[in-house]
Length: 243
Image (cartoon, rainbow, N blue to C red):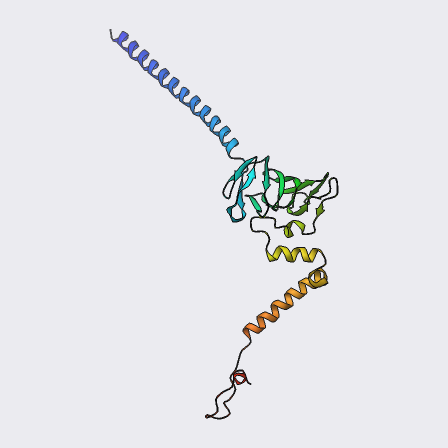
């Protein structure tokens, strides 16, 4: 009797062990499958994305739809900017694309590179170090030096088939970017075209530096009061800074 009871206990224990093993194995398989699905979904959603900023939060067109500051930009989308509205697409870890008003382009990017096909208008592509950048326009392609990063300033030609304007500050002068059209852009363009007042690039830089020094000196120069000729004589305006 005791032998039968022992066999029953052993059989019951074995059955419970097999049941627990089956449950654990099933749970592990479900967990592994879930992990694969999550990883796959994360891979799709976790790809490189850009963030759009438009000048004055005015609308531009992205893939035919109206878009303003804060919109997410995905690789392969086309962007058109209207007159007076520049835009910037920030690409975290990759670089930045500054788009001038009246521009039509297609932007593609992924970790390590950013590429623009410029149909019309002007664009500045900035690739961070460790990334490569390129701009294709008018049948020619401008590229950064490998993956060392850099900036490409390009305006398409208004004449079909003609060579685009490259590296002359034309896109900066056209107001590329959400904050474009600044004095800095104008100065850059002037320097590229021969400098301010025809001084050339080096002369322009020297002129701006000298102007800054003179301005600073004028601001910080001390003004010392000279002695009053006599207590009864009012001090004149020109006496205030007399040595």
